[in-house]
Image (cartoon, rainbow, N blue to C red):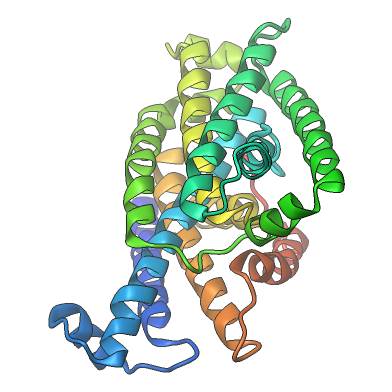
Length: 333
């Protein structure tokens, strides 16, 4: 009972941290807007400059940050559990490279220049790459086990990476468009884009909740999981679909943002242990908060310009991960 109360306390703390991140995201930027004024702009729409900044620019950006941060963090938890690799993240299953290939194809082959148009190509590429990785791994001797998944993902990632860089090296126009997406950012997104991602996030969250206990069993080994009554092939398939959907939607929308899916799961496990029914929701809350704080830091560090959130998460996240490792707080599932 005491352990459950402690875990619940960590979840409540994460909720408070996320609320603070949301308030910061709505109020801090090139123009500081007091929190009371920001709340008034949400509750009583007007045509004032502050109200327009909050509603038209910062609310969509905040919503996207919450969605993308949660999706990347949960996908990281699932990938680390599936591959039993504490360093697993979007690149491990080739999903990030698949999304990037879709974006490059949209620009180079179809001449699409808008972010809204890239999203669907990126999502399609991520889904196809993830499905290919799982298909190849399923046909190996250990039947989509951790090693085959990791190796298949690494091979697909390398192959697609070579294809991308080959296209970019001979097509300067595509490179100019692509480089704004690949840096990883939640700036310039619209409410419509947030709405587009919401169904994918809901599907991923639902599947993650369904397989949470199965992931706990997989951590004990396939034989033990079977003995506990879990159908490990089904657990792996549903978990892989959840990871593909979540990562594909997040990467397609915001670009390949580093660190969130890698380190947030370790922080969550350090707080609540390895039970996925606790790790998954806590990771979602911490991932959203981390991405929002990174985005806000990027707004203010080099005014009047901005540093992309993906750059900030990488710069800030690497030392934090090293600190966790030094304190032996990196906990595997």
